Image 1: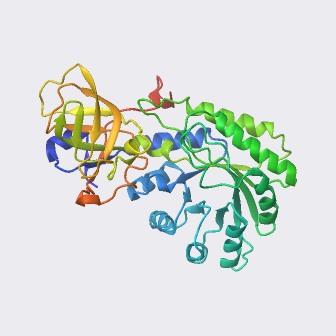
Image 2 (image 1 turned 180 degrees about the vertical axis):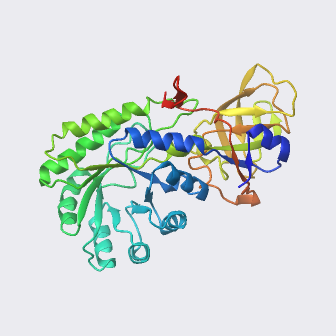
Image 3 (image 1 turned 60 degrees about the vertical axis):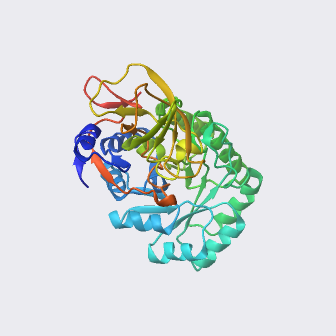
Length: 392
């Protein structure tokens, strides 16, 4: 992968007509090491967030060697980088063919489920294997999340109690998991999830081998500035203490966005300006899906041909290059007032889901990916007086 010192030098050299995706490796190292130092348990990177080989390789090099996968393709992507990396199949709905491939071809022993039928599929397809690690996923409130995952996955507590008892009979090791939703904006959600797990443990009198608090850890956006990650970790630690268990199970989390968001950005080119509307060459069918559907506002930076940039800022909304009117990003994206056709804009915090959501709709698709070494537009990590990065 070609490397540039900065986004500005990339644009000066390439003068691209297509969107460019940029990868920064340092933010991944910083975020990974923070989780490894401060989270009270094991870290499983959520591969769905960004499965790019360079990203996976950087995560492994940073010290995270376990992965939360949702498909056989994601297992393959990880195993190509490191055949010994542990993958846990945490999607609660899987085909029998995928379960079979995962278990017999890739030696995956860890599976999640949220229904009796899924449990039956797993145990039948693995020929009643005696070495399974099975996680029962519980549905919890996603009220503080920007993207709600509770409607699709998880058994309600009353159903999870019986399912947990049943699953215990077929598991070498058993776990309970939950997910507070993507980009969770308040630590209290983890308290509520752990409280539900406590109810199940108390009712069944079964101590799990694992408690999985899932993902949902936030990153920073211009209009979404959460409490520091340390507050989330403290909430989790205190909630686990409140369970008053004689022996604490092994604790697991599945971060994605918080690990890789700062690592990615997209460089777009302005095709047309209509007052406060900017038509750009990437959009919701490309790397900017999250800017359209959940209306996440990305940090933005104008890069011109060298002319003076206005000090007056204006709120713009974006339109992508396709013929679909849903290819629209409300923003507001704050940019200098004199932005015009031919200018470039860097949009940050796209390391999470930017690459995975791209399509070839209307024939618009760019696979130009380069590494850059400058700092991201926004970061939730600050340096101390020794130059070490700390969470803000």
